[in-house]
Image 1 (cartoon, rainbow, N blue to C red):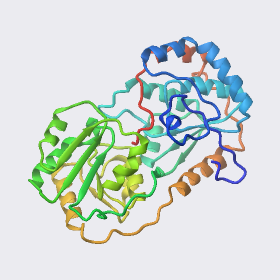
Image 2: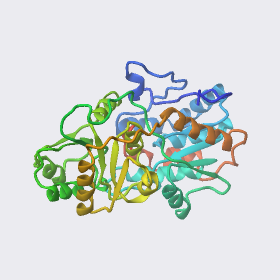
Image 3: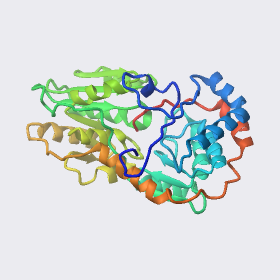
Image 4: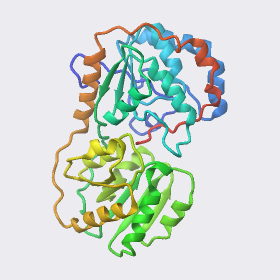
Length: 365
């Protein structure tokens, strides 16, 4: 936002956000004490009326012209009420319009529906998600719907693929949940058979499962079931020559966008928003969501590993600025829509938040 002429970006984050605890934290204009467990969340909700008044007062002091919710969470409904009171129009970025199989946050989708239903504008990061928002009637009448591709994240300079001079290195990175298709990956490896010329790392956080145990038994495969801090992601991308996204369904992928920006080939299943995101990209290879097709796509990528990777310049900062510019152009000059009845103070404090699941901040899709 700060890179746009005539625009000053203000940032509000949880006071305990990982990015604020790092070596070079950004300026946070409105840090908010949130929670680290269910009891903490319940305590914040019980303070609903006083917290809402406090947030409203602080937001009025910032004199913001537009608010953007980058990734919805349980307390954002309270923020929406405070922003309404402060007269600030609100845009919400929607990554997923419905819950993925195996996703452990069922109530979060209900909360998101209410947040989206109170927004003046909604940014969908694929037309696949935009279609789901319309079909599920999640938008309030008169709200703007902006469709843009997921910009890539920038984790610093990484070496070019195969700079290590060894065997091909494949990486599967993200939450280790059923919809990620790790069973398809295990089946594809079984079809490929033992390979001394291949290394594969499966890295991310999720529940232990039979599929993860099966993957660990394959030669050349390592499974690292752990949270990966942002400071490690650049090195993880730099280790890999190509990424494998064997998803059974997907809205879009921040991992794919980031891998392409880092000059990595991406092998992905042709599902959901991945098809539109990756179709026609020289670094992407799409396949059907089954083990045989995935094995063939991996083999084709290995066969092409000796060929030079096309150099396709991609500027993450420019992509994010384009998204910011679009939101500002669409919503900046306008005033918010009339308050929606379903976003009342009582509903924030009284319905479901105390039992809401706790999302992990900072996840890549």
